[in-house]
Image (tube, rainbow, N blue to C red; front, side, top):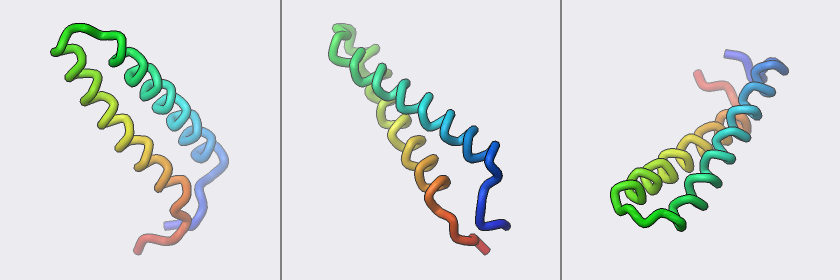
Length: 68
C-alpha cells in the first residue's frame, strides 16, 4: 500500500466527512425536538453510528503510515 492518498481520494473523503458531520448535527438537533420515543431511539442510534463513521473517516485521513 502507498502512504498517501491521491488528491481526488482525499477530496472525496473530505466530502463524505462534511456530509456525515451535517447528518450528525441534524440528528442531534432533531432529537431534542422529537416527542415520539421510538423516533428518539432511531435518532440516538443514528447519532451513535454517525460518530463512529466520522471517527473512522478521520483516522483514515490522518493515518498516513503503511499498514502491512
